[in-house]
Image 1 (cartoon, rainbow, N blue to C red):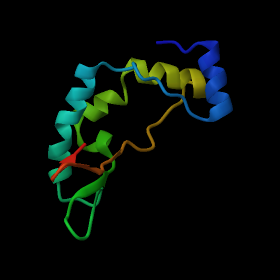
Image 2 (image 1 turned 90 degrees about the horizontal axis):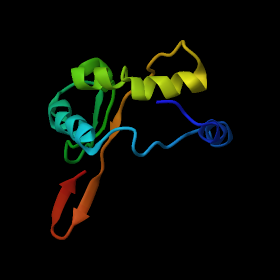
Image 3 (image 1 turned 135 degrees about the vertical axis):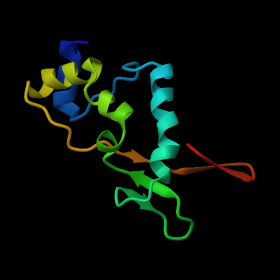
Image 4 (image 1 turned 90 degrees about the vertical axis):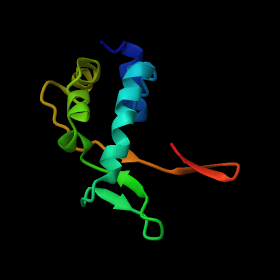
Length: 110
């Protein structure tokens, strides 16, 4: 995947770029399926709430899980990043910030 000139200009202006269709719903579902297993791990990379033990941030996912390790090496992610920052890239952090969403009388995790 190659970024357009307009996308590169937007990144340079705003400091970020949103690519909403970079991965399909099915691909995102594969990532999502992995989260309960990662959240269940008792490790320093999982930051939990003190009052209910729920994970709010899970860090280092690319170092803990093959699916996330493949994600950070996927050409649809790497090629645009290389366009923006050059060939020499490294992954600084892959993390998920979780939050509770209230729906009626039931708390649901999204």
